[in-house]
Image (tube, rainbow, N blue to C red):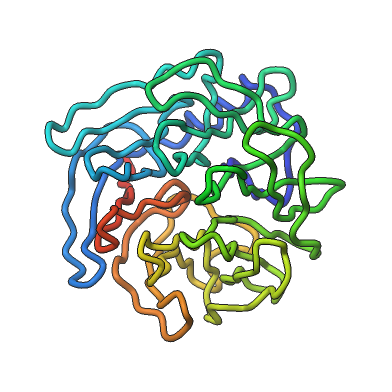
Length: 303
């Protein structure tokens, strides 16, 4: 979640946070796109901000956040249902599903200090369990074996990639670079963690081994590229691209002209599959359909 530039974590109360979120007054279009044909379909329009759809592995449901809460959207019926998240009523757009889809991991701004920490709860709803004692921690990936969670965290003034056992414990630091490393997500085979980093001066797409070794610059573009999402078949990576001069490298704000781009997971040329008004909230988390052909995302329109 980025209310302001994530590189600078403001000290704020929950009331201040809610006020900032309320200032973002937009319509939201929940959409899907065929990544090979570019055909877009609007599933539902909302008169408020929704963000970051996850697609369940049975292909029937999208999970998203809105106004601090978590919701499901049933594709067959268009039914929207709130997920009971207990005390976690300030969830942000960093949330993922467990590989078996029985659990939901969320990033929630805790009331004590308004800092994002990671929790898990049943996807059907229930009381959250704390995973990361320290914050801010912003969730992005769940390992295919279900054992570990990957996230971006600020520790001692620097944002890097960490992993932690899903039931909590000692966190493992994978990157150690000045600037911002973010968007950590496991490949479906569990061999790599994809992420985005400002280490070259622009936000770019990188990949590393799960132990943090072999950090490789995978997408080199004259753009600021965020949130690499690997398709379930492991063949493709989708990400959000901002214009080089439209944003600072470490910022991913809403209300910008952005593109969703696609690149082969093994490397190669990227192609644009969607141009839209959005950015923050459009595709922060993995939103691939199980068929590895469609993506869910959110576009916006100002009121």
